[in-house]
Amino acid sequence: MNELVDFKKWNIPLKIEYAENKGRYVIAKQNFQKDSRIVVIKGYSTGIIDSYKKKICSVCLSINNEGFYQISCKSCNVAYYCSKVCQMYAERKLNHNMVCPLLRRLSTFKSDIHSKSIMKLLLNSLALRKSEEDFILEKSKNENNNEWLSLVPLPSDIEEYEKEISKLNVENEVQNDDIEFGDDKSLEADEINNINDNIQDISLDSDNDKEINIKKEKDEIDKKHKKKEKDKKVKDKDDKKDKKERNKVKEKIKEKDEKKSKSRKDKKSKKIRKEEDNEQEEKEKELKGEEIDEKSKKEKPKHKHSKHNNENIKTEENNEEEEENESNTDKYDIITNTIPYAGVYQDMMNLQSHYEEWTDDMKKEWQKNINFFKKLIQDSKEVNDYIIIAVKEYVNKKRNIQESDNISDIDVNAEIENYVLSFASLVESNSFGIWNNKGKCIGRIIYPFASYFNHSCRNNCYPVQYKNHIYFYASKDIQEGEEINFSYIDTEGVSLKDRQVHLLNDYYFKCQCELCLEEENELISPINTKKNQKKKDKKKKN
Image 1 (cartoon, rainbow, N blue to C red):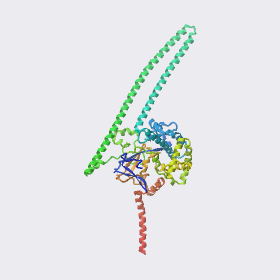
Image 2 (image 1 turned 90 degrees about the vertical axis):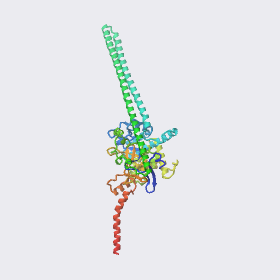
Image 3 (image 1 turned 135 degrees about the horizontal axis):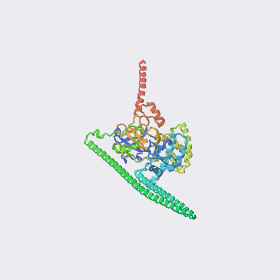
Image 4 (image 1 turned 60 degrees about the horizontal axis):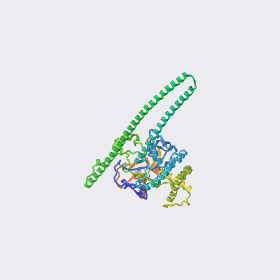
């Protein structure tokens, strides 16, 4: 796992280790003070609940707490976006079009919302797998390409797509102007033709008075047309003037944005330099044997514990205020202690599934979903091909075979069922909820690298989700070499018995953390005391 997550390369002070009794777990490679940031991890794949699809961007996961997003995929009407940029990114880089028809059919399927969100997450993951292959192919042609596939638009993508969008807007404006001008011309031509027709009709009449009247009428109409032309020229002139003013305003806004971004960069670089200076000072003090001043080391708390909830997270509307305050800008920055990639399909599939521990009733509950999913993937040859590849890998993993193309001895139909059920169990055990500001779960997200943090009822860190990132902060001082863990469930005021039942039912393990062991000993201790007392009493009698 350390080969896949190169913590050293990204200067992240963590390490993943393995033990028989608890599997993979994360340890600290340096001391962390309370409320300091430990690591930031990016999300991989999502399954948004249908009833909330208009409230959340399918790409960057920006939540609209005030209303609904208007930009959507017109083909499936399932994916909604916060901007045209995110829509273009989904279509061009994340292969949304590959699963678009299937998502549309899935939205009409009658099943519980959580099962549908898991199936949606699986389809999105298969599309991402295709994106990964496309990316590797593109990278092989271009050595200067990025080192990982980003699942959200990078600044370079945003710049490129915004230019394209503005170009399209200008072209549309020009077309609209041409249509308006063409309509005016055609109307004038029709009027003149009508007049000429009248003149021809009247010229056949011998009455001179009528001819004079017609000529007068023609003169009046000519005057009207001249006036119209004059008004149109004035209007065109005003429009040009307005257009120039609009362009000036746009340029001013652009300049303002550039200044803002420059000032942000300057602030960040100043902050980084300041941190480096502080580190250097601390090292010098350590060498001299001096005690480091507690004030210089102390950091402001960056977060309150929100337990995967967005209550304490400011919405995008408040971001402008945050930009003005330097202490707020680094609250959700994605530079400090950030793993810059979300992982790949295989990282997700390496997570633990508890499908083998499912009861027959649990499997029966999913049978309706399985039957629908099998029919669904037949609608897309591309998706079906990727499912066959995934099933082959799943079977090889079960048989502990590295790689085998031979599928002649595989019952594909039965193994598709096993693969989907195994995936469902993997998602239920490893996914995080996506929450709105009212504390409602509106979808699921997989952070492959966040799943290596173990549970503890007496945790020393806590996670906070923001858009498609998850931030881990220290809830107490953590020493180098200490395991870093967080609580998978709400433990405040919950009894030992209830905690154990919850964890066993949802996560398939009996918690052996410090708190649980202490409470178990407190319960067992009086019983042992009574037993020992009885033994002593018996000996005395004898």
